[in-house]
Image 1 (tube, helix red, strand yellow):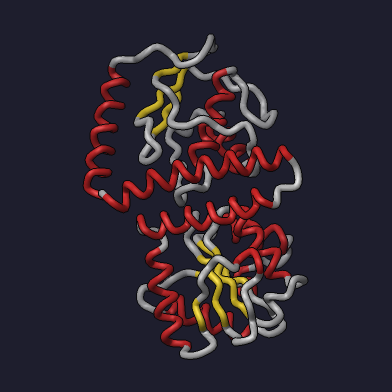
Image 2: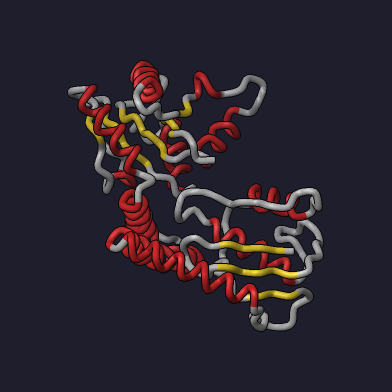
Length: 305
């Protein structure tokens, strides 16, 4: 679940700022939940794993900029680079006037806490509430595109160039679709309803399966094609595979912020099931068929039997 914001700070010179920020965000109206290591780390468990999981399930990473946290050797660099890898919004918060943005975050606007704390806090609260809006999602996609374009210019191998270019192409498509949502929300809602109706009608009148010979029955084209290069999401894929093997469980929903790879992950899983096999060598699984509903980039449904 993406129900918290991860606070990344340096314990050398940013701990008091972090505690103050945590208290103010959670005590305000509405309360904004945050993940703070000094409170939320469980004793007896690996700290690195817990921090990585907290970043991967966060809505954003709040990077508290102090002289030590912007240092190349600061642990904060590992945290915000991990957030970028997980496609999370990184929000720089300047708590010291001499703390400059790291190079990879230089294209992001920071919120200045080095002056009036309350004014900066109000701006941050508004921004965090804006993030899940259509405009906020669009801005997050545009930030990811800028990061990918920068990475493309510095790709060390042809293979990585291909992977990054695939990501850029996918982001351009997502940005175009999200721009339509921002420009015409009522029209988008109408098209979604019409698409749902068409999908239900196709379910009542099954079409020919897409692709070659398969062991099971497949109705309608999938809403997306998993890229040839697939990174991460192996834990989530394993959880889905375990769910499908349990006959006592009948309904599963995959939810998350736009652009984090939900469709690619599910389509990769279902593509493997066409051959009766779970991905990542997790073993065989026989199914009767798959029905794809609403083949759109937004509001899609996938059913299996």
